[in-house]
Amino acid sequence: MRPFVYELLPGRVVFGSGTIARLSVELDALEASRVVLISDNMAKSEADRIESDLGERVVGRINEIEPHVPIEEVEAARRLADDCQANAVVTIGGGSTTGVGKAIVLDRELAFLAIPTTYAGSEMTPVYGITAGEVKRTGRDPRVKPKTVVYDVDLTLGLPREVTAGSTMNALAHCVEALYAQERNPIVSIMALEGAKALKRGSVIVAGDPGDVEGRSDLLYGAFLAGASLGAVGMAIHHRICHVLGGTFGLAHGDANAVILPHVVAYNREAEPEVMAALADALGVVDPALGLRELAETIGAPTSLSDLGIREPDLDKATEMIVEGRGYNPRPVEREWIRQLLEDAFAGRPPSTH
Ligand SMILES: [Fe+2]
Image (cartoon, rainbow, N blue to C red; front, side):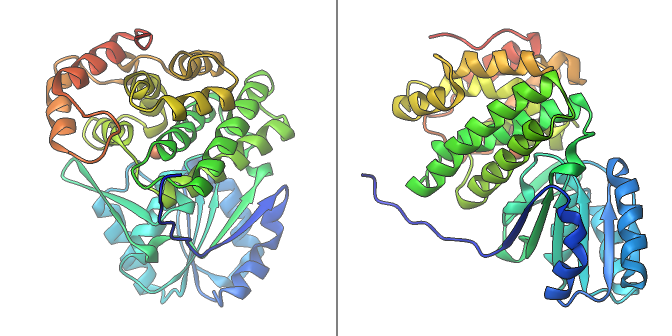
């Protein structure tokens, strides 16, 4: 067995249907008496309900969130927290919404409770990202991980099809990259494989019936495991590519993940045969790269970068940024490969089979 080091991260997780009803009890446990409530547009009506339930406990609100956590938004949110003397932050929404909460507590001592409504998984990680001047910088700091996470399946039943698809592929990418991460360990691999299995199962059900509670439970459970895996180990080239496409070229993180993941799996396949066999098994497919591409098509996730707003001349600049980024990948990163991958992904070609 490979030797390993595994640092368990503290945190409380409440999972189920209707769990939002426990919010005030969970906030009591955190001694959160003055809350800044942050939601994105999609979760606004749910945030309205939370505000009316919590009453005067909510001392400040933010209802609009830009993607990729821009620094200006972070500074405004920190000012708001200061101005209303908040002692807690509650976020409800997708990864960028959780991301703003993290950016606040990176610099302020506030209790932090997150209610994720997508499959981004950020709520389970000590990783934060802030975009300044078109570049998204990420870092790790245990202070940014939410103290409590409330997963309520009911909040995800109405998640639009395109968001569901991209977000599911993002969660799958967390499982995949955790499996071949430099810091991989047996416990995290169990979580990642179980996560991949649940995500595959749930995504197929939900593609047929978006409101299926069991399918949505599988997806949220899979996303939780994917996020916990992402929080425990470092990611590899797939995430570097997606951060460049998102931070610099404005692509939605989930959409970028959906297009890129099958190509990266194809590239890393030979370097990690055992991992890929286990992944194929979890997904119930013969070839994990082709299986992921097929899944993207089945659930209606994008398969081509050209549909996502990036222009062909941008691919050179993106290649440079990705290659310069360095970092671990099981197979060494070559410039020609990145360029070819981006070109294939741009044209919507299937991943290479050899
Ligand atoms: Fe991600």
